[in-house]
Length: 179
Image (cartoon, rainbow, N blue to C red; front, side, top):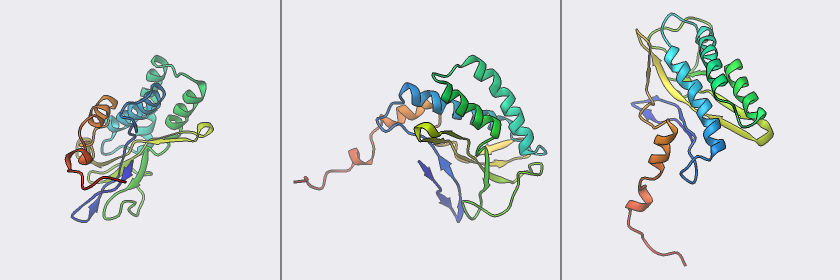
């Protein structure tokens, strides 16, 4: 699910992966977990005065230990995860402001407080037609980063718990019966 709600003409950009049946399969959990881990490593390192390239390098180094401790069920998945991290695929995406894909560039200069952008790590497994993303809108603060979209669950167990809650369809009385 990828969407861009707005507030007083300012927009955001949020992307999450939800299991349709309410529970992640072992393979889904494996793939989404690596994206989430990489996203968390990136968010932990965003701070003013540092270039996105340096943050990508720091996060990639942190992911090496995770890769060593968490073997993948297939070489294809391991290669896709390493490609995401080594190439920073989607990690520092686009500026966000009055438009969801706002104008300008920020990736070649040190980050400054007030810069609002999308963090959107993307994992691709083309052999299986899989394209998975986890997107958040963040702002660089004087001391680090604030995630504007952290109100939406991102941890896998939290998403599964949310999927078990009643939804709008269960709360609204039925209007009629289908033939």
